[in-house]
Image (tube, rainbow, N blue to C red; front, side, top):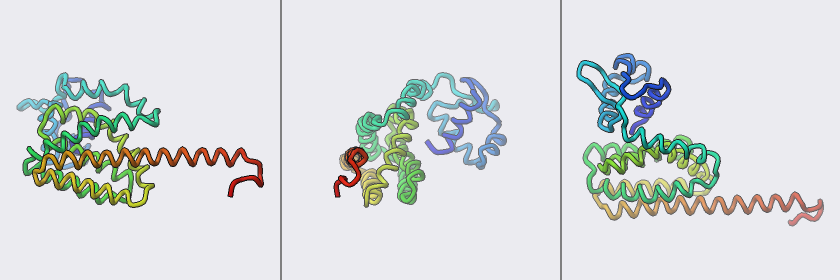
Length: 250
């Protein structure tokens, strides 16, 4: 899914368009979103292929009734408050990411077509270009992993990862903001992304799975290291505050 698809989905949610409701005409919608009509048509085709939009000849585009993705998003909604309130939730997210994304990379290496490869290369370039800014890189990082899911051509896998997208986006943003504190970590992440993409583009399925697994294990290990060092610094600070003046350790 592209950022434009997220905009359209947000518009549907903001206007509370129920299944079966008609979307604004193409010209109106393109103007509201600030995009060309050709780009909007291309994105609409993606939404139609995902079962989110139904197109009726001569009648326009409509919100699809009872889509699988909508049901999955509703199932994920109770997790959003927990994800925002519970600091350690990233460990649960990381467990499911390691399972899903390793399989997605494996199947993408076997099934990616020319368009998938172009999108993956563009996503890789974007994630490397945004390395200096955690917020920009978090969006690009999520888009990179979604490009791999798209290239897997596994409809169930793609739908599950897409349904988890918002939760993963929170996880990725939180993780990258912490990882940027470690020296050389951004460069290592870029090399890992390049290894994943390179294996997929070369059709090396086993290597792609391993590269994705190595990448997520590195992220998990780094986050645990940060948590350990943060806890140690917190304990040291608490100790200094309790010691009488003149008796603080050198």
